[in-house]
Amino acid sequence: MAAEIDRVVAQVPPLRELEALRDVPYVFLDRDEFQVTLEEILAEEVDREQLAVEGQLLIRLGLLPEDADLYELLRELYGSQIAAFYRTDTRSFYVIEREQPFAALDRMIVAHEYTHALQDQHFDLEGTRITDPAEGDAALAQLAVIEGDATLLMFRWAFEHLTFGEQLELLTGLVPTPTDQQLLDSMPPILRRQLEFPYSDGFRFASAVEARGGWAAIDEALASPPISTEQILHPERYFAGDDPVLISAPDLAGALGAGWQRTYSQTMGELNMQVWLEDAQAAAGWGGDRLVMYEHLDGRWLIDWQTTWDTEADAAEFQARATDLVASVQGHMLIDPDPETASVRVWLADSAETMDLAQPPR
Image (tube, rainbow, N blue to C red; front, side, top):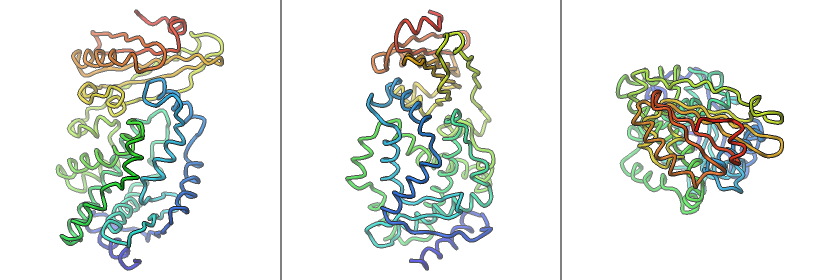
């Protein structure tokens, strides 16, 4: 097994056109050891209090069931779907042992994870990682470049180094087990889409970039990644330098009165907009957005979501689709379009009385 891993490790750098700068340890974990490691990583990486606030936001937008615990959902989802991972703190990659013998699928996974090690050695994945929780869309786009690169290399490696029989074997290995598929199907679409996006859409993005300028172009994307999921979904916009409009949302806490505080701020981006609207076409004209949530000590809440669109027609399409969602969100929703600027402001609140505190245009 060690010899097979070392063989893959030797094959990846010339294929990816990145020189290995240092050795990369690898560790095998059984499923129980992985669960312990996952809990440790989540404890280090996740702000449970902030995640609970985000969970409340998603519930209010109708993206999670009312009784959902976002932390537990993520723990269950990642605990079942991860087959291997690379850690920037230990500069090692970890492979989770399967019941089947070490085979073509395992070697392909090694190629993927070792690519992350090469990325880290050349582009400092941890030092350049977007960590601002209010910039989730940009962080997801950055992750899509990283995973898309490794996924593209993984398939290139399989084509170069696996026999035809082994490639056929992969068709079975890449299909989720009935248990895994059942879990995926049970997950809220927003979580499943965010899980799959960096790999599926990231792969398509990396393929488009590599076709345009080879691995050197992907190196450039790693060094200067897209700043929105829109640019991952539409690579031509990344090539054209079509950046999203930055929206600076005013802080309404003072105007709302005593006891109110701003608890959450985020750019939702085209990807999350697709899921919320349940319509990729209606989200395709996204130009930028900023969502801010306010909460009162007594449980009242208000969401101010400002969006801008590429054209007036795009804004009108979003407005029409958002209007259809009134029954699926919590509380009260008010949609305030501005055709002159191709923007639409969406207000949500626990009650009409709370909505009146913000005095939005009607």
